[in-house]
Image 1 (cartoon, rainbow, N blue to C red):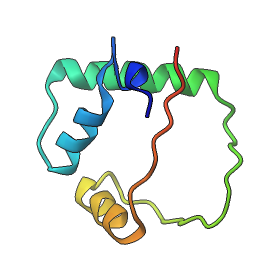
Image 2 (image 1 turned 60 degrees about the vertical axis):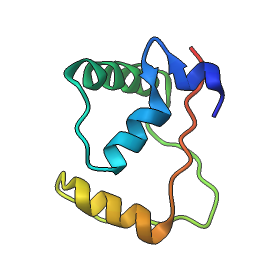
Image 3 (image 1 turned 90 degrees about the vertical axis):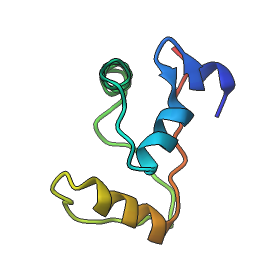
Image 4 (image 1 turned 90 degrees about the horizontal axis):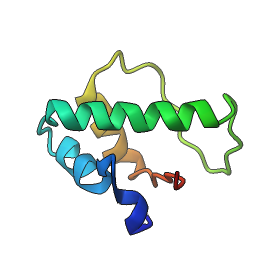
Length: 85
C-alpha cells in the first residue's frame, strides 16, 4: 500500500487494521476516520466490482468480528487497495 495513502488525514490504515486483527478496539476518533474514508470510497465506486478468481465467498457473519478474523486466518489476508483522494 502506498505510504501516502496508508498515513493520511484518515489515520494510519495499516496500524488500524493490525490493531483490529489483534482484537484491540480503535479510539472513537479512529472509528470516525475509518467510517469517513469508507464513505468516501463507497460514494466513488460502483456497487458492482469486477473480481479475479480465485475468490472466497462466505455467508453473513452477523457482525461477529471473531468470525471474520477466522475467515481471514483460513482464506488468507485481504489486500486492501485504498485509492488516493
